[in-house]
Length: 404
View 1 (spheres, rainbow, N blue to C red):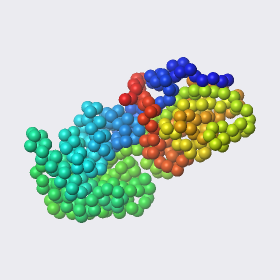
View 2: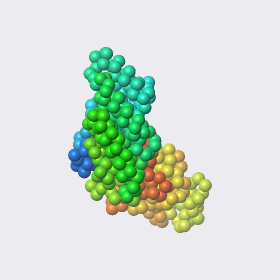
View 3: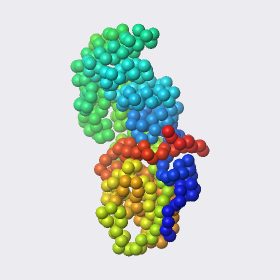
View 4: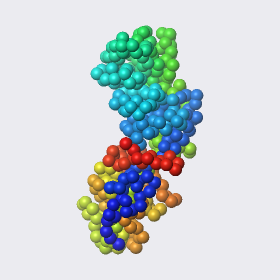
C-alpha cells in the first residue's frame, strides 16, 4: 500500500469538497446549524434581542455567510470588532444594524457614518470625532440623529469608560442634536465561570450606572451586558439585548460549563488521505523523530498542518483524527502543511479516504473543545485559527457552495 493520490479529483471528494481539485482539504460550515443556533439563542434570551457576533470572519466560519444565516434564524443585530468588518457586511448586502464593539479610530468615523454602522464610544476624543463626521454627513443631506452606544467599564478593564465618565458621555450624546444615545453597555470578564461572584458585581456596577443615567432623564433604548456565557448562564444580565459569539457557532463558552443541549457545532474540518504506506516497527516519524511505531503499521499523510490551524503541540498532547469512523492518533510532530497518522497494523486505509479532524464520522466525533483542552487554550482560538488558505464549503441541507 503506497503512493500518493494523484489529485483531489481522483479521490472522489464529496459534500462540496470536489469544488477544490488541487488540495483535498476543507472546512465545512453548516448554515442550517447557524440558523438553528440563532433561533435557539433568540428564544432562550427573549424578550431580549439577539445580537450575533460575527467578528474575526465569523469566528473563522465566514462573516457574511454567518450573518445572513443568523439574521434568518432570528438575530436582530450583528456585531463586529473593526470598521472594515462592518464594511464587508454592508458590501454583502446586509442592512441590519451592525454594532462596532470597539471605539473606531478618529480617522474612521466618516466611514462609520457613511456605512451606517453603530459605533461604540468611550472617550471624549472619540465622541468629538464621531460628532464631526455626523454633522458633516447631515450637512450633505444624511438623516440625523446618528445612533451611538456608550460602553461602561465595570471591571474587565480592557476598554470602556469608568462608570462616572460613561454616564457623563452618555448624557452628552443624548443632549447632542446630531447624535442619539441608542445603547449603553458593558462586557463580562468571567461569564464562563458560572458561579463566580464577579459576575454579580459587574451587574451591580452596571445597574448603578444605568440608574445614575436615568436620574439625568436619559434612558437608552438598548441596555446590554451579556456575551454567550451571560446569555446562557446569567439570566439577570440579559437586559434588552445579548451578544452571542461562540454559542452562535454551536460551542459552549467554557469546556466545563453546562452546554445548551440544542446548540449544534457549525464547523467541521476535513481532508482526504494524500499518501498511505506501510512502515516497520521501530521506525520514527516526522520532525524530531519523537514518535516511534510500536509495531508494523499503516501510516498516512493528511494535507493539513499548523499553517492551516492545527496546533503543532496537538500531537504531543495525544491528538487524534477520524478515519473510517475510528479514532487514529497523530504520529509525530505536526508540520506546516501535513500531518502523519498511525492507522495501525493492516489498516484498510488508502489515499482518498476521508479524514475528519473536527466533526463527526460515524459514531465518533472530535470537537473544537477537545483540541482546546488538550492544548491548553479555548475553542474560540481553535475555530478562529483555521486559516484562510483552508477553503470554506457552505452546506445547507442538500446544497453546497464554495466560500469567497
